[in-house]
Length: 193
Ligand SMILES: Cc1cc2nc3c(=O)[nH]c(=O)nc-3n(C[C@H](O)[C@H](O)[C@H](O)COP(=O)(O)O)c2cc1C
Image (cartoon, rainbow, N blue to C red; front, side):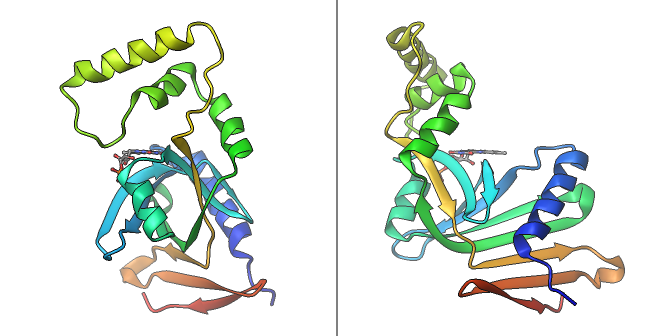
C-alpha cells in the first residue's frame, strides 16, 4: 500500500475545511519562542500552502518576528471543529522572498494595505484615535497612488519537518498520523491518541 503524501493529505483536509467550516479555515495558532526559550502563541492566517511550506504575513517589527529572528523555528496548529480534525506543522522558518510578498500585498484590500503602514504592531498606543490618525496620515500620503508594501511587513514560511494529522474518533480512540521528513521522503507513524 502506498503511504499518503502529507501535503496531498493536507490539501484534501484543507479543501474540506474551507467548504464546511463556519469560521475561517485558514486561522491557525503560531507558536514561537524567544532566545531564552520563552514561548508565545497567537493566531495568524494561512496564506499559502504548498510543497515549500506554510506562509503567513505579519509586521517584521512585531514580537513574533523578533522571536523568529532569534530562534527561526515555529509550530502551527489548525483546528477544524466541523471536521473534528487538527493539523500540527513544525519546522524551521524562512523569509518569504520580497517579490512574493509584493505580489501578495498587491492583492490585499486598499484599507488593509494602509493599515499595514499605520500599525506599529504590538506597540502600546495612546487610545484608538492614535490608530485612526495613523491611518488618515497613511491614506493622505498615498492619495490615489498604488500603496507599496512596507519594508517592515512581509511573510514567513514554516518549512515542515513534521506534520501531524489528528482525527477525532468515538470514545477518544482518535486517529493520529505523524509524518517526519527524512531527506526527500517522509517517514510515517501512527501515534497513540
Ligand atoms: C483569527 C486571527 C487571525 C489573525 N491573523 C493575523 C495575521 O495573519 N498576521 C498578523 O500579524 N496578525 C494576525 N492576527 C493578530 C495576532 O494574533 C496578534 O495579535 C498580532 O499579530 C501580534 O502578535 P505578536 O505581538 O505576538 O507579534 C490574527 C488574529 C486572529 C484572532
